[in-house]
Length: 203
Length: 203
DNA sequence: CAGTTTTCCGACACTCATGTCGGTTAGGGT
DNA sequence: ACCCTAACCGACATGAGTGTCGGAAAACTG
Image (cartoon, rainbow over all chains, first blue to last red; front, top):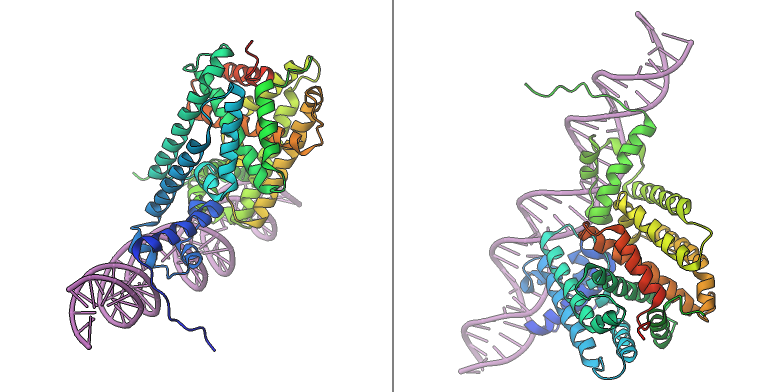
């Protein structure tokens, strides 16, 4: 009557993929401290100690998942930003690409960019590096728009503006995860319009 | 040669204030799971079990600190938004008020609005309520500007725009905490300009 | 100054976490 | 068919964290 234990045995890379997928979900949901390796193991359908056969520690597991998701994000938006077109079109397509990444597996974005705590030094450093690289990419994309606005992209004020836009996008993505019925196109349209026209475009 | 233990003994409310102040710092820095009552007790200069004489559990301590900081925030920005003036001036003064709150004890903002994890149901609910009340206040402030932009403030797209602005402000505040040498006026100016004029204001 | 309240603390019980080690067995190469 | 690598797991050691309890003593009250 018991379920039979003829467990099928995976090879290293496949098992590691299953584990990182499970870890992604749990870390994104509970945060680093809140997540337990037991829970990740259950989610991966494996005994807890198996994790130690593939990753030396909890921290390195998180780091591996973060690297994985970061390259996935880079590839995703890098593959679908249209280089040509008007400045507004480029802005819109970049925003759309980011929301599209959120749409396919929201855990990745949450893991990389939500929750700022994490006292651990190494994790903080890696996360910081990922943030900075994203900020650099955004700055490059927005450079000429900011010049047109009369702002030197190398000034601190430009850094603040870029940070505002990035954080705003993340905030909308979070909001979207709470209300998933909103269509992506509407969010892209709203953010683009607000950002491009500004609130004072009235008269 | 040892330090003498003539400990001065506080009355209830005073001790509770010391504890919540310590808890604010530690919770904001480490998050809920990452923080330990031992560390909070050390920071408050008291034995760990004293916390249980004033708060029934770790969770309720966090909730108390959150409520405290939320009312502090409400009072702070409520006291210094100029009701009159042009729409742009109102926007600027609200942004300035929020950054001013961050400037005086940044832990409050972090505790209330950073890190989205927290699996605990009750904590999540309370945090959600605080977020929503903030979003409502912001929507009320921005309502006529959005009307002028041709957006009904009750539509979902307006909700997304408000969320964008709020999250953007938080992002700039985070960035500011990492580079505190930037003057507040510059940040207020940059965000206001970007938000009011928009990126497409070029020609 | 005596009595009572209330603040404070040391020691304990319990749970749950990470990380280790040795044994077991599936599954592929020869 | 056999072996041997490596995937898998149960049991253990260790540490840290939460919450409880009874007692000591400061400070307020009469």
